[in-house]
Length: 453
Image (cartoon, rainbow, N blue to C red; front, side):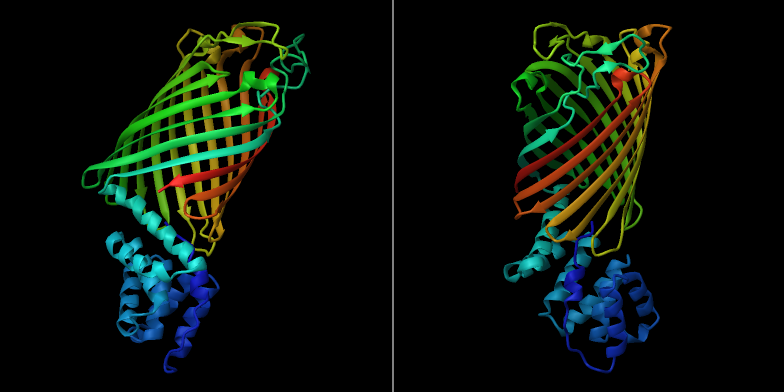
């Protein structure tokens, strides 16, 4: 994990002896420009300067940021022997301990700095302490709880289509008053959950949690689209050096307008490997059983026509394989880029092959921290679904093909260690050769969250 510290480095104004001022200033200048690897390479070319306070200080920081934390810690420890009260050096040596996994030493240094820390320095130190607490779950029981409330607007709450003729289905039209017609509305939402871990052996822990939430629309006629859900999961995680293994079970229930609509039971498994300080690879699999209830639904927005949904005909088993690469860049904004490829196979269990499909997907996610309390995220996703049989099982119709694209943007601001606020914007577009499944959607939301630590 990388956390923002460039501003602290750039703000240093220190007075050292003049004998080695020029080399140290070169390292300092490269760090301030955001080139720690160049600073580290320059420092390695002058090993005779190791042991000089000014050189050790800046070389230590450069080594940490260039992926050589062992050398960085040694250099900073030499500096602290001469200047034990220097706060910047103590912060950076604590950061080095954190990178090396020496959480007890890192916590001790950071906790000693915290009482007198202010502004950005305090924010960064608290972020590191939170990260250390998260890693402490390896050997001490931990639990977290959150509650989140939000409001927003959705241009297409029912993933509906425009009224009129339907592409791919000659003679079929959608009535503006029908339940399939595109509908916009504002909404409010609420989400809460608890998560915990319990270590049972070195590097082995049991994990579990439960979350519940819902979304309710403001227009009274749109309560038929209100949704709520509850999800529980439990499993085991094993950490062995740079490798992490996890497996577990998940179970969720979903309601539409107060009626139970879907239950999903899943097994998940994942292996992740930290190749170095900046790169992480993961592969995983998931198997899910999707079981629908035949609830009563309205077919028109005036709620005059109703009948069974017929949803159990969609009961299926869904298998997914995926691979993810995550890379953390060396930059003051701490950018992290993650790319995922996935393949899925959905098999209908009601002898309805027109509901079975092959799924191919890709996703790219970028997060940055332009300021200590701010984080920005962007995620672009694509998914193609190829169905196995003719639409509605009728040979005269084509086999359904969907291409789904979405873009999600988010901006979060940490008011303090417990309160945060987040703005979200989503654009989704699905193209299909069967017009009943072709739609676009825009959604914005503002959420406030409280984390109990």
